[in-house]
Image 1 (cartoon, rainbow, N blue to C red):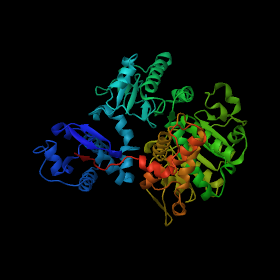
Image 2: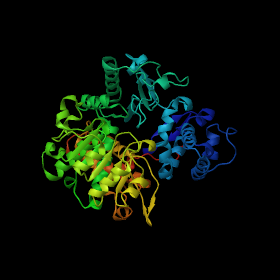
Image 3: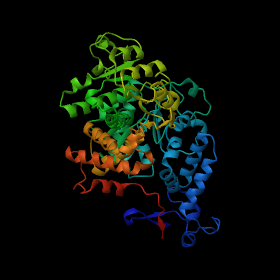
Image 4: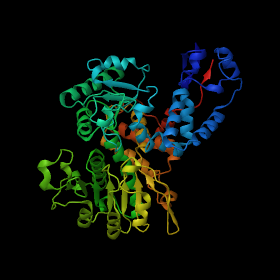
Length: 534
């Protein structure tokens, strides 16, 4: 057995020889030293050359750049993760702006759609209706015992792509799928049955939530990802008071968008309370963003939350959400039903309400038409336009369309990345309202404080921390978010702000509070450096 010296000088035993080379957690490939090769029975199992991780990373990024198809790059990165985990994260950290669109949106959308075809090796747990009554035993099958964060999905609403069933990791709750194409796909890897609903669904989810808390403890963070609206809100409401839970689509999206709007205040020369907000899309993302904006306005102005909500309007598939529709509205839309005559269509709503901020969370591409953007530019010197739907094909408009149709006056950000745009001799760099700005730092802040519940004030703290990282230099380029290449520094500040709020609210259990939370956050971050072997 090899002994590995881990962080904080902890020593772990791992396999020797051939098994060591097949363990992605500990494999270093050609970076094993001469002494390590002798001590751990690696002689003859590797070519004689010893190279550094720097050279390995240089070689791998060169190889990945040879692929022209993004999905091929994604698969190459997944192969690397299954072979050498440390090198995978080193590559990602060093080239985050280049590789994030490969391992995250937009390429991950295509990977999810084709997951059955490209599936090679499971990297998480699959809990299906077949495991009902046995969920705790399934959790015990996972080799790691010290789990701090669980990301769980039921696959019903992946990005803007709809029901993709059992096609997400690391924990998939597989209750079937209503996607006919998947049910008829010979390569589909999930349950071939219609999606379970009602009591059957609720019982499996409750067993899962109970088992997680029983096995991993109260401080494990459960991040809900890509649940459909009807389940997303119900799960958050049901378990928010008993578990440490966070919904990325509702709360993560809201936090990153609010951060962009806080930054946009400086560019537009208006406070949040001065703005009128209009949303296209009233699902979990739209209503989640709207609620966090209202909370921030209430906090800034000391007006009641109900009054702050009146500055925010939502349009769904049936038109503007107004009081006269109250009886037919889903519960999460009702707070946004204001007094106004019914209006059909986004353009008509813009002409009536004259909003200063237009936010798209509809999941429907090309809905911010030329007429829509021109109307926003007619009523505002600096219209704020956020096309948030993912992936790129579902974006409400492109960056080029927003800048061109507004004559270069739009303050623009999107959910998926767009390249810089040249317009009338000026270069505009569109911001990306990427949830990846928020959830790593937010999760770290919860973990390092030992928080036992998520509070809305923590989301506001995360937004404010992210907005504070936008400098005058970034504003000069029209950016609403700091460059993603600084994500580790950004995440440390977000984590520190979230942890500070957890301590203020009395929700932190790790005592005493560290004197410098930013430095403490940095010390808690993952290091891709290779470990030494004895």
